[in-house]
Length: 221
Image 1 (tube, helix red, strand yellow):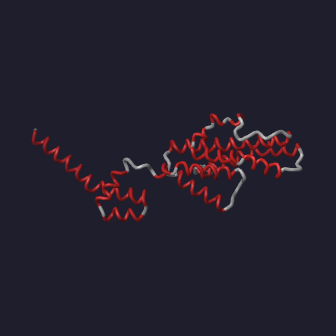
Image 2 (spheres, helix red, strand yellow):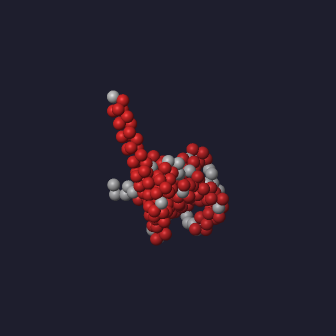
């Protein structure tokens, strides 16, 4: 009985040793090519100790998608908001393609949360635009981008550092933006301004939904 247990222990130890000696470097090579690119991947091929280290390092390394979370969230927000203008310029197409590739690397739970934040950002901007057009039509002072009607205190996108940077940057240049709006619609009648304010909202919401579907790979599904 004791001999059998010793044999089982020896077999288990041998299997574990084989996994560590053979499996860990192989996993390290795959991980290195995926995470660090071809140059370090090739180095892992010719240096098994480095490959083994990379095989273990995956346990504590921050995933690449997470290291660029804030910056790429900001780019995603910019891409979605440009879509509200039905922008189809090559740089906009390239921006969406870049973000779509990054989103494909994100775990499902974080991807779902990001989509909700982008949707919240888009709808808040549409609400702000409607405020501005209504105020312009009524001859009132413009409500600001921090107006309570926008619900920024509870807006989910304000908890995302990248997306909140977009909004806060707009707040800083709000006076310039409002003057540009006045100049753009100078001479328009009150009825024309009201029509623009309310007819534009459904179209903006359609463009927002279509952009999110495209970026998150759901268009046509």
